[in-house]
Structure formats: C-alpha cells, structure tokens
Amino acid sequence: MSGHSKFANIRAKKEKNDAAKGKIFTRIGKEIMVAVKEGGPDVNNNSKLKAVVAKAKANNMPNDTIDRSIKKAANSTEADLETIRYEGYGPAGVAIIVEALTDNRNRAASNIRHAFTRGNGNIGTPGCVSFMFTEKGQIIVAKEDCDKDADEMMEFALEAGAEDLSEEEDSYEIITDPDSFNDVEEAFEKAGIPMASAEVTMIPSTTVKLTNAEDIANMNKILETLDEDDDVQNVWHNWEEE
Image (cartoon, rainbow, N blue to C red):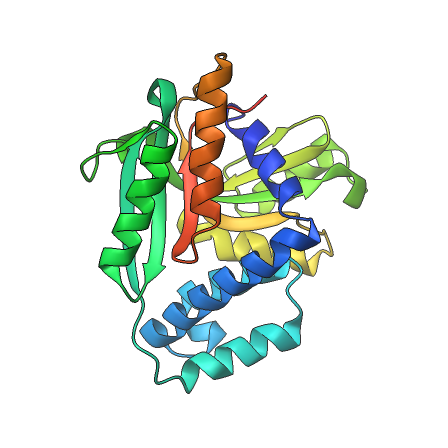
C-alpha cells in the first residue's frame, strides 16, 4: 500500500511550518466542536472525539488548547456546523474529494465550485470519485524522530493492530482499519514514538501523475484556493506530486 505514501509525506511536512499551523488548529477546533456536540465531551466515551484529539496531538496542538476547545464546545450555543462532502475532477482527471464544515451550505458550495473552476476542474455528482478511495487510519512517523528500524517498526505496528507499514526515504507510513485507528495511535503515543501525522483519511487506490506544466499549475490553483477557504476541512486527491 505504498503508492499513496509520497504525497501523504509531503503534506505532513508542509503542515509542520508555522504559517500552516494556525489554520490546522482552527480546523481541528471545528472538528472538536462537531465531535463534542455529537457525542459529548468525554474523550473515553466518544470515539470520534478521541480520533480528533489524536489528530490534534500529532499536529503538536498543546494539551491545554485541546482541553479549552473541548470545554468551549461543550458550553457552546453557536449554530451547529454541517458536514458536506463534494466530489469532482481536477486537470487530467485527477480525483478530488472536499469535506467542508460550515454554517452556510450555499456559501460553501459557491466557494468550492469557484476553486474547481479556477483550476479548470469541475464538481461532479456524489459518488463520482469516492469509489476510487478507501477510508483508512494513517500515521506518519519521520525516521529522524524514531530510533526503530523498519523491521522493528513493522513488528510494533502489527502488534498494535495496524494493517500495514510502508517505508519511504525519510518516513514510515502506518495504515490501519478506521475502527482500529484509536488503539494503534494510543500504542504509538504510549511508546513515546512521535507522529508527524495521525488521522483517519481517504487513501486513493490509484494515482495520477501530471506532466503538463499548465495542468500542474491548475491543480495547485484548486488546492491553494480550497486551502484558503475557512469552510474547507479536508481535501483528498489522487495526484501523485513529484
């Protein structure tokens, strides 16, 4: 299951810079809000909240910030946020899934449609590309942060309940069943193994390489425009970036 690792690792590295962290923390705060409203503020009795907290910790969100976000969500009287998923195509048929958390469905739809149009892509019907993806738990561990070799990491990950591990040049990628993600993430945390990324995500079954400079520029326009949209929580695609 190594075909998708490259852009997953690149993304994890990009998200380490300080400029991106503010956006990441804001988005995680919204996920905490939704998880608490759906299942309550007790992490041990709310699997969705537990997964979001794992994601927060992997992104170095301070514990006191996480706690404040949970308390704020528990006492919040703000309007409920709605989760909406859009599917479509970028240049050269790249499959894109966009997940939004919004209090205004019309605004979110308009902005996301604009992002696709700006990069010469188009939004399709529900289900048009999701069949190309599988929901999986994904943990990225940078080799520089870990003293285990590939064999030791494989043994540890499988014993913790992971499905697979792939080794990249500078990192390990651990794949889990979504239902096992929390247990595997907890095992890594207890073992003191730092995680560059830990989340339940959408893994593409096939990837697309873009060789045309205009296609690459257009794809980047779509991703950059979506990244600037406060309603957008997650973007998954099958573009294999070089």
